[in-house]
Each structure stands twice: as C-alpha cells, then as structure tokens.
Length: 317
Image 1 (tube, rainbow, N blue to C red):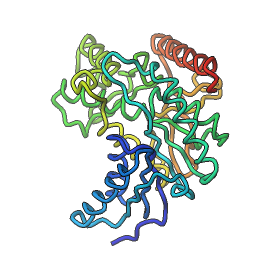
Image 2 (image 1 turned 30 degrees about the vertical axis):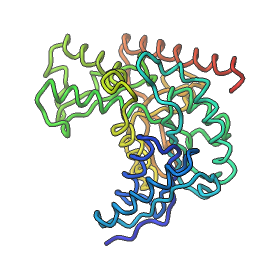
Image 3 (image 1 turned 180 degrees about the horizontal axis):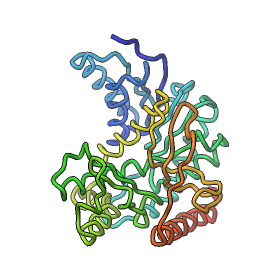
C-alpha cells in the first residue's frame, strides 16, 4: 500500500457539498488530514466521526478532523470553500451576493493568517464573484485562487449528451466556458463522444436544446429538490481540481481563472480552460471562438462585471 502524502486539505462548510468533498478527499487519500470546518457547533465533528468510522469499513487511512476553530486549518495545502447559503427555488445566484460575500470575507481572513501558501478553490455561489472577492481579500497570486464551476457545468453537458446519444458518459467530453449561471457558454464544437464530434451525432436543434438545459442545470435540480441545490457533482468537481493540484496531474479543466488579456478580457474572473498543477493555474488555454461564442463570452463578461460592481456598491470589494 502506498503511503498517504503528508498533506492537509481543509473543506470550509459542512453542508452537503462540503461534507461530500471531505468524504471524497478522504476516500481518495489526497492528504493525511482532511479538516472540515463550520460555524455550527457539533456538525463538523459529527460528520468527521462518521467519516472516520466509514474508513474502518473502506480500509482508508486519511483522518477527518471536524472543527469550529480556524486555527485547526492552519498549514493547509489546499482549501475547498463551500460555505455560504445555497439557492432555493426562485432565487438567483446573484441574490446571494451580500450574505455569501460576508462569509467569504471572514474565511479569507483566517486562510491568509494561517495558510499563506495554500491554493484556494472556491465553490460558493455566485461563483465568479465569490472567487473575485476571495482573491481580493487574500492578496494571493491569482494562480492560487480559482473557482469550481466549469467542471460541474461541463459534467452536466456530458450527461445530457450521453443520454441523447445513448453512449457511455465515460466516453463523453464537453466544454463549458463563461460565468457559472444563465449566461454560461456551452461549446458544442469542442464536445466529443470518444473523439467523434457531437455535431456529427446529434441534430443541431437537439444540441442547442442540450446547451440550454445545461445553462439551467442547477436550477433544474433546485426545482426538483425544493429545499436545496446540487451537492454530489459540485463536490466531485472541486475534489477533481484539488487532486490535479496536489498530485501535479496537470489536467486541462474548465475553471474560473483571473484573465489578463486571454480571450480579450482583462482583470476578470471567468470560466476558461486551464491546466491545473502544483502551482495552481499553470496556464490558461485559449481556444478559437466562433463569432457566436465570442458574442456569448462578451455577454457573460458583462453579467460578471455587473455583479462585481454591485459588490463594490455594497462595500464588500
């Protein structure tokens, strides 16, 4: 059996997304210690106890630590930040700006104090704005502050393509860029089933319908659940990003990165393809865009900038 790396991961927020992140990180043995922190007394401790007892069945060796004390997170290599209020039916991601902006500001304070070399993966919604705020509050290099959105949105697109084509989802690759919201930009021209373009397998009208369903994918789950939002796929996406960083896998994954001229945008966090490795964002990969896709990227940039301006008006940024 290979030794578990002497590393430390902290998951902030012991809700459904956070607890699933902790479970996946521990099961995959990404670190010796997986810290789960929440403001609710007893909740992270109870989840940690349950996960550690599960390890006895699964035969895994990572230890989960549940805590309410930020000092227990110090020295972490990676943070996965899920804390914040989830969406409920009728609520947009932008409605969460103020309440979750204050959560992110508080979390950034103890990350900066105790883990100055950490890489931070933000999952909290509205994603693109919260990762913008996190980076501003931390003052870390942009390559070490990234948002999880594109992996999730692309996974949703993958599943819809698999359903439509009857193919195994394992053979489907999809790409979704832009904001994590209604203005996201699905990229059918970069979607394949075992190397075959989806545009050669499915009529254009059905491709467009799948793209639209992807844009509303989170809302579809919120509507079905009625009392919350998705957690399994978001957690899997965040842990996949953490694994690529911690293990220097250099996977090409769509995630929210700070753009400095790429795709024609400056100083804006947006979902783009990026290579994730030990340094965080190793590089951003620019793809050729059609006139339609470029127009959609301009639209999604405008939506992100509007939320950034709102955050400034609130005095949070």
